[in-house]
Image (cartoon, rainbow, N blue to C red; front, side):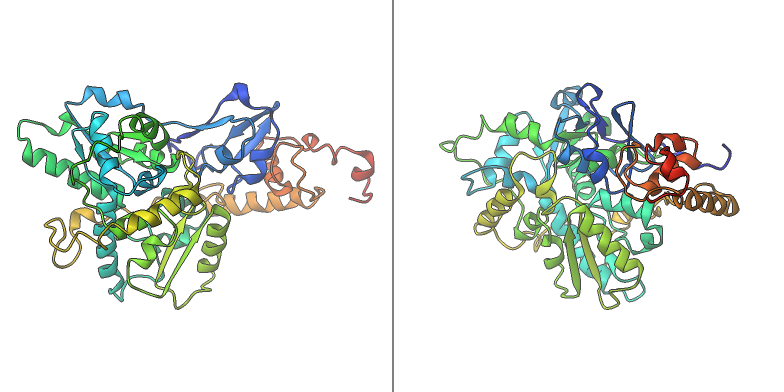
Length: 429
């Protein structure tokens, strides 16, 4: 149909059809109503999916999974760079020195390790500078969690101008790492260097895979933190004292948990929320101008922050405790003497100049008149449904089912209650 939004977004959350029993568990937990049950199997609507991993988290049959790059993908590169997310340090028991983790990455075949924690400290400093600008819309919303970006683009497009226009720590780490490697290895070309991010969640896989087509990818592979953990654990021997190679501080490590980014910007007018349901409530309130005095908002889709990602190994509460213990051995930051940090302002190459692409799920056509007419028909159909949100029709709510009917994706007869003679004749719902 002409004018209908076409979504080419690549997703990392997928369904293992053979394991799906059509139990509707995921149907009830999806925050964007992206899942339907058809012919006894779940189906994910790519136009609505935000790759939050909630369906992976709640599926009793392990029928949902994340797609990521295997470690062997790096074999095609001459020089291999690891970008470990701060969450990785919290996965290990009895760890009192993060240099063991950095050394473990070298031991499994990486040629260079650039910690995303370090890039997080750089982004923290630039965010502090950004907040001093009185011209930017407040509150400023962190751009670190890709789920939040996708969610705003789909459900809260009016808030897109509030997003921090600075690249995420993952991207800053990739840029700085490749620059360092190429400067110190002039015999290598851009394509010779394989940069791999070690991710705690599927959303960051999707974020990397959906880079602009007119730009060379700055990250070549996204690896599962769980897979890397099991590759590393056998090489990390306590008797082998690692070299002092880590360049991360407390500020960078803190980004792994909810509130860590906020507390580091030295601004008490902030709010930090985690868990997708809480995040949606906060965005609703920001859209309604319920927080007029706030200056910074940190939102994490995963419970507890990135430590709660579905591609991790350790329970998020235990991982948080591990990270708290590690902070005792670290300086607050290691950036004071860094040449990577500009003395003033924010480097132009780290600023996001392309606005967030808005894909509102409440719009059904690029023509406003057609869209409004469609919404009116949906409300009309919804008004004659039982409003019990039982899910038997395969949709999560009666309103979602009404939308499916109007779009031609479902029939009124798919609602077993609607087909009852008593209901059709106007009897009690």
